Image 1: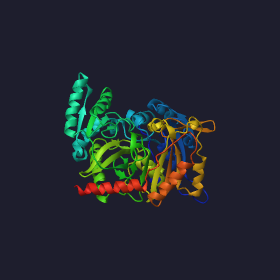
Image 2: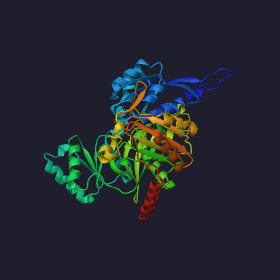
Image 3: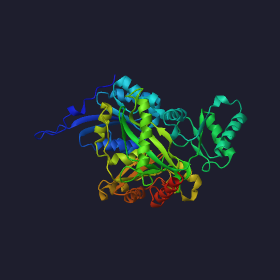
Image 4: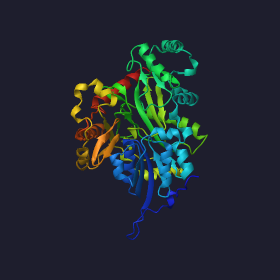
Length: 490
């Protein structure tokens, strides 16, 4: 049975006659990287509560170690160890929140709530629709078929030999004029997708990628669609959908949107709710589509869809908005654009999610830009640009102090969130994935970008590198021109 959380209306948060009656709240945070460091930061900045965070982390994240009342490392984030940690501290923890997809998909909410009674903010295992791209497409086909590109599902059991699969695939490629995207059924952290013209230029190259994925399970081959991408996120209490402002993610590793797909090299949010290339009608259409999906799923179980069950990658095309995929968690980096400028107290937002009365979330109008700095092994950088790698820095500590010192210069308009980094003694080391994200906050995208880039440049050591065109004026203007051209084709 889930622990009963006191209604917000009954919590007295006002000091009386010199007495401080601020409510003490314990929060479990299941962490992977910078996304969860941003959550911890938002919790600890609460003005309404005295917050203690209990963090289960993939590594000794230096920010989380510093901020947590208790910090534990579970390298594979297996849900049994997470549950054991929570169970031992259940009398101190009011609720938990989960960022990474793996424990959500494996059912961390179901297990923790059943064994500890601690309410968890994430979808249940059944409703983590990120777990299967095949089931996503079939679900969307039932509810919002217009959101789907043309697609075909290939199942490994349908093919006895390789040549049968090749023949079937090539027949489908004939229909698509080779303009195809290959996606494995199971999540691959944004790195399992292959796109014609980007990752392969011949059918044989495409088939090799397809066949390797088919060995492990179903594969979807979709029509490659032309457009501009946006990320839609919404908080959800199971009954209501509270959309957040739009963000734009940069998946490709290198400047100019080249190189392999990554978990995301950066992102931006414009001042206001929409992106520069979007119209208000685009935004309303996104909300309409996601609301239809939400209402359909909510009819089955109104409590299952807590957290951010809809983090949707939309492509805005000449035929309207299409859904590339849905994730059942906050975006990384996209939620990092939002959390630093929440007007509502993040603890209150979470209590309302649990209470089932979150109808809206107030977010500041500022623009934000997130830029990631990453190690040379990430995104094939070392293989692609060997002469640019500062080899003498590989394996050496990373110095974040220069970036943190900029906080005084910019009066809180810069945030530095370690991701795949580990605290060893008093030194910080970059690991294998995205190392550290820097958020710039400004009145417009350009000023936010300048702050983010200044913070990135102040980080020294570890041979870290970054894209230099995240939220650049040139990149945004190109998106605006492209979208104008697509609208003329309608």
